[in-house]
Length: 139
Image 1 (cartoon, rainbow, N blue to C red):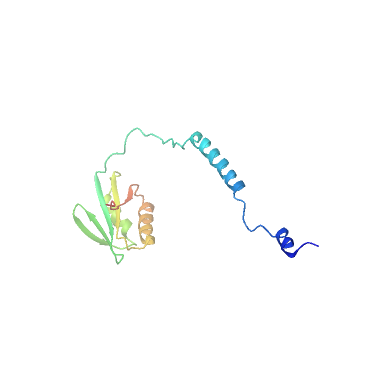
Image 2 (image 1 turned 90 degrees about the horizontal axis):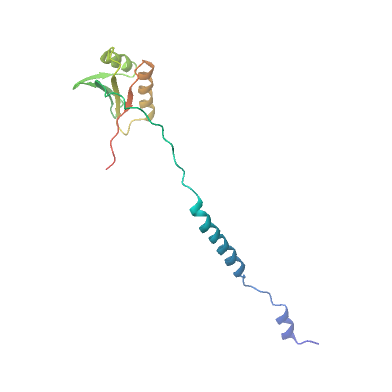
């Protein structure tokens, strides 16, 4: 009959994880990635080219949207007030028949995005082709 100490020695479970196969697999993956990484070409964007830039605008009308969503029209240093309902009509009267007039929307950063979009939409519906947004460059 075996002694009690020999029985416990034979049934003892291994409580350690064998890390050698894991390290082998990771080294193989590392080698595969190191070999294939130089073969991957970075994506190149083929940008379209244009003949020349658009002509500079003859006149610039600025639509200023204040913090309280009040609209002002600035043209050649003169400031006029406007509402959302008549902003397109007021700008159209300032622009006249000159198709090369640019309209720039300058909105305070706390103004709702929806207000800016409504002003831009009303100007484009009125047939004003050159509508842009004024931004400040980050330092």
